[in-house]
Image (tube, rainbow, N blue to C red; front, side, top):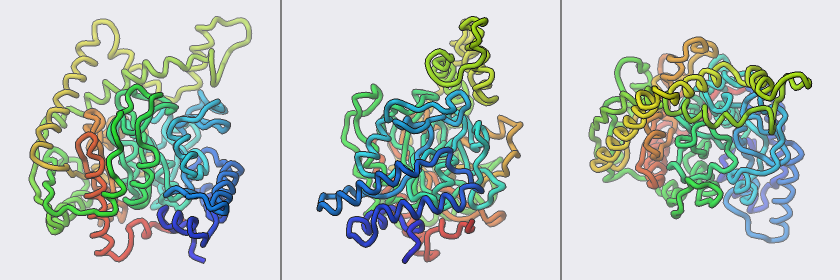
Length: 497
């Protein structure tokens, strides 16, 4: 039998629907893979073996009764540990929520269950999604399956690593400044940040509410589109949810083409600090788009140079407000409650022990930026820059259909290399942050290996808000051309664990 862990999500779903294989067999194969390799990778924080098998048995029972199965019924998935899951732990990668069992499912979790997607477990992440390498997890770092001494990106490195190590064919991530796209780029997988408000944030533990967005992660563009359709759509439980039809992303992924499209190359995403191999593969991708019939135009977005600074005022400011709820009084960790200390003392002791260094750094930055006398100079100014970035995008999309750039300036860097240099770490999200500030849609997909280190390079595609289907149209065309060029998907070159 073909190794079930090497099939795409679409292939798995088709085999289950036809009766060629059962959902239980597929789930057991992936659970066995997790058991075999995750001790090295550390993609998962929690594996719900019994729950996953119970879901799989329910899918098989539906098929035996002749019920119609959804397009991803029986397909296993790894869920970033930032979404609440009723009855199983949600830690957000933090000691402050270690052992917390939510009493409800996030909307994304519920939609996965309703679609009969098998949730294998919860994946490792930077604490409260604050990081670019998954080294900020309170439970230890995750390794990149291409080279276990290197990072798998962040904050959703557990989700991307689970895909690249064939522990799951699908995963869910969240993207505040690039935390879906950046891990996808450095692990040779596909990651999509939908339009802000396109996927519900209800039950997704908040970091920065005006930036956070959940989205699909997969090994192929079509698989990402199928997952996108499952989790997207209006949710009355989320006040920022868009009450419009989901763009036809699956149709776009099945009919990928760039012929006649106008594609803009972002001038500001190049130059000093960009790895030579990354720029080589990106430039080759641009030429490939031209060969496929696209019109290529260089686009300048001058405000993008200020995006990183604006982001690191807005995101910490919002996090300092959102994380105030972790006060040791309602849920999670409680330290020093021995009957002799005040509530303020218990709160302070709990936060000191429960939050990691990066979370504390961002809380302090944000609190300072919001403080009396500094609000206008820092947070207010950052919001003005955000408006300029939105205007740059609007002007660009008057001339082109989508924008393209490298997803990250470099390939995966060694674990520990940037741990003591926050600015170097923050630069990993240089190309992805503007999209979050504007609320647009964006995708990263593999576009080759950097010649100097043999590690994956990501191509970023950016589309206007609610034009998510353009990502899949372009992404599918590029993917098909690269497969035709190489004869097989890039991810299959990843070293076996």
